[in-house]
Amino acid sequence: MQYTLKKSLGQHFLKNENMCKKIADAIEETLVENKLKHLLEVGPGAGAITKYLLQIPDINFKTVELDTEKVDYLNATYPTIQSKIIHQNFLEIDKPFDQSFMVAGNFPYNISSQILFKVLEWKNEVPVIIGMFQKEVALRVAAKPNSKTYGIISVLIQAFYDVTYLFDVPPTCFNPPPKVMSGVIKLTLKTQFHKVKSDAVFVQLVKTAFNQRRKMLRNAVKHLFDESILQDDFFNKRAEQLSVEDFAALTFKMK
Image 1 (cartoon, rainbow, N blue to C red):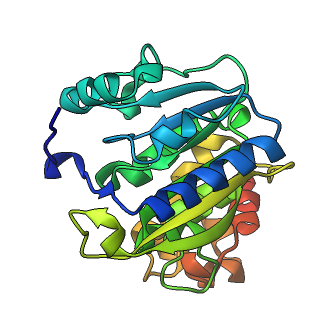
Image 2: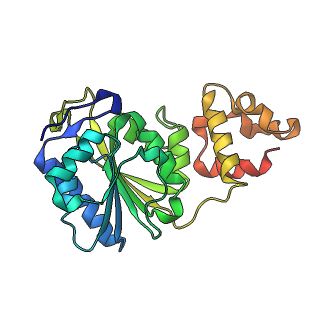
Image 3: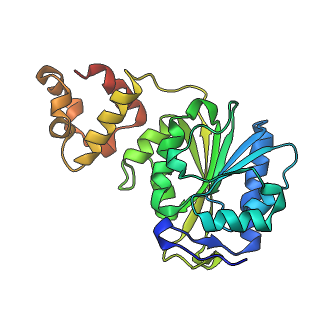
C-alpha cells in the first residue's frame, strides 16, 4: 500500500533506521524511568518510530494521526495498531488517558509549538515529553535568558518543565530532507512550579512583554500595571533579561 507526502501537514518522514531506533529507545527508557504505562505518540506518519513503540511491553499505546491515507496505511501495515489510532487533529483531541501518560513523537513541524502549548493544558497528567522539532524551535524551547532565542515558548514551557536537548537529527535522515537540522528534546515536569497570580495572567504578561521585545519592559507592558509600579528600576529591563521566576513574581503586581 502506497502513501503520499503532504507538505501542507508539515510531513517529513524518518527513513534512517538507526535514528528511528535511537528515538524509540530514548522513549522506552524514559517510560521505564518514570514508571509510566501510558504513551501517546503524535504524528506517526508511516510508522517509522511507531513500529518500535508498538513492541514496548506492558504499555497502553495510542497514536494521533490526522491524514486518512496514513491511518489506512498504518492499519494495513501494522496489525497490532488496530484501535490504537486517534484519527483527529492533535490540537482538537480530548485528553486520551485518565492516568499519567507520556507524549512523544516526530511532531509535525508546522504545528510543533502549538502541540507543546496544548500539552501544557494537561501538564499535571504529562510528567515527560520527548519530541523531535526543527532544531531552531528545539533551541528556542531550551533557551535561557539574555539570548536572542529566548522568548515566549522558552518561558511558558520552562515555567513547568525542565528541558534537556538530547541530540541532532540531520536532514539526510528524512524523506524528503528538510532544509533545516532537526533536534530531539526531553521535557520533564518540575516538582515545584513558580507561584503565579494565575496561569492566564502569567501567559498574558509573557506574551505582551515579548511581543515588543526590543522595548523596555515599562513601555511594552504599561497597560498591565499601575503607573506607580512602573517607576521601579526593574522595568528598565527588556523581556529577554527576565527569568521565568521574574515573570512569575511580576504577575502579583499586575492590575
